[in-house]
Length: 273
Ligand code: IPD
Image 1 (spheres, rainbow, N blue to C red):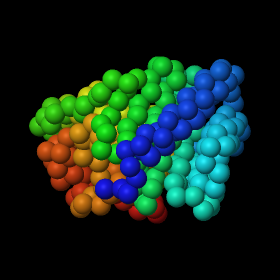
Image 2: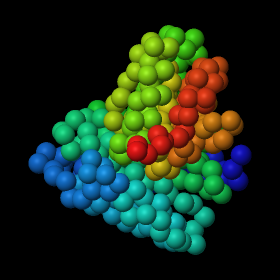
Image 3: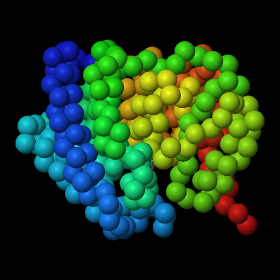
Image 4: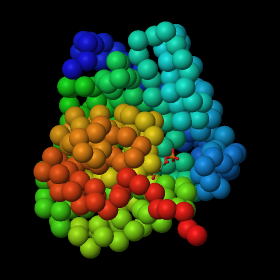
């Protein structure tokens, strides 16, 4: 386990919470009337003015208290620093929901020490929910402890997932889903990976998997799911990574893992032609 003390982790969590709540307030106030500022990997991978300004605000808040800490953010990229804590920030996870005036979007902030996330906060402003965890300290929603659902057989599992922005990746994700869907209770596609993982942490789904996420999507929420009793990882014992993330109670994790691995859920479809 990390070299940070429980007190250190609590202090890092307090800063993550403060920054996530302030970012969430500002984003919620500006949601109506927001438009697309830019696009990234595809025309549907959008950035709003708010993604950028909320990330800047969060960076300022963190650096006001801990100048010199490195920050990795979805919009501003990697900012090096001499500090011992790396902050992993997604100013708005679920940007498409945000753009469409929907409520399933989150501000996510994780504090990582020595390559291990030790504190994480995910604010879901439209629902007034704040999910938190420190390493070894359990997971909470609005201060109340949360637990992931106990394992159920795969055929009874409600499974959340998401899709990438590129059509080639989506074609493969649809292929994988063609096999998965008849084998489970049902599928959910909420539109925010951070919210998906936090909902898993409170038993609102049984499992979650997705290809193509980045550390800012899962940073805080993977710790929350893990502290709620879920196993969170990639294929063949790997930690969560951009190829694939799977989360579920340990026995169900194993079943879902064994279904997904031979389907190439961690790969993209070959280019057509
Ligand atoms: C996206 C959301 C979505 C997931 C995508 C992510 P963004 O993050 O988490 O649920 O399916 O893969 O990129 O772009 O809204 O920050």
